[in-house]
Amino acid sequence: MFVTDASGTSGYALKAQQALRSELRQRFPDAAWLDVHSKCDLEQEAPLPEGAIATSATEGTGVTELEQAVIETLLPR
Image (cartoon, rainbow, N blue to C red; front, side, top):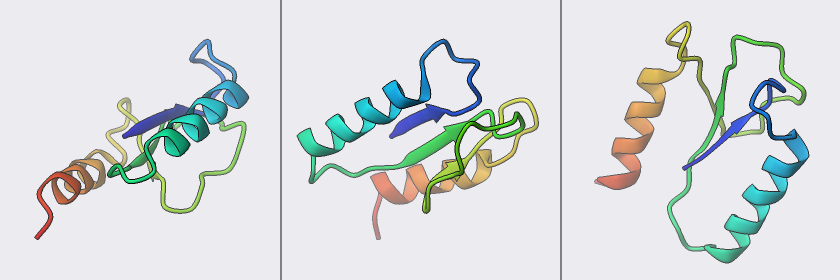
């Protein structure tokens, strides 16, 4: 699971987060993977990538979807 904060409030530039994500995907190409974007209730610096789960702890948005995705990733049928 990789969590990106595209709101600009994390203290880490979005480009740095994206570079780290790319490096990890290249390093672990066969690993199960979930892309999560946090703080979706705030204005975002970039659009949500296809397949990413948008979450907001403040509003509870995406929490159930993320929980289900984690379960399905860790316990495939």
